[in-house]
Amino acid sequence: MPFEKGNSLGGRKEGSIGQKTKQWEALAESIATTHTERFNDILSRLPEDKFISSYLQVLEYFKPKLARNTIDGNVSFTKPVVLDWSDEPGENSNTTNTKTEGGETAS
Image 1 (cartoon, helix red, strand yellow):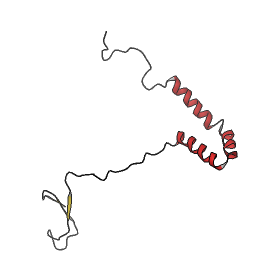
Image 2: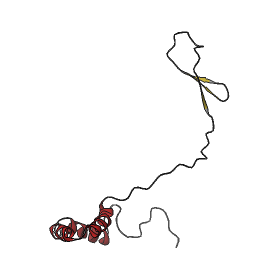
Image 3: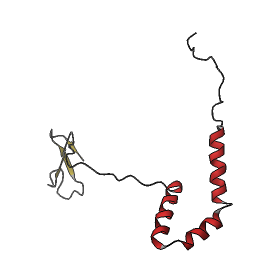
Image 4: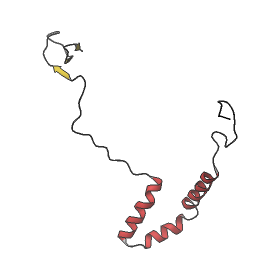
């Protein structure tokens, strides 16, 4: 029998937390509270290079790395904007006229 919309076939209710998620949350809580002093004590006794390496590895679980964003040099725009700095609309105008490639003016 194919699945029909609206038919509930059981399973976990929407928004409920699964057993594995509960276990991971308990482990994280244990690490963040119960074992904090012991972990900090061990870290403090490590040589500088191993301390930095260990610290950065653990830090990734609490503060993920940011992805490096780069822009390719071949970016093209559909309608380039050309600035017209002349005072055509009025002699003492403080506005800047902008013209698109098609010649339309947008102030």
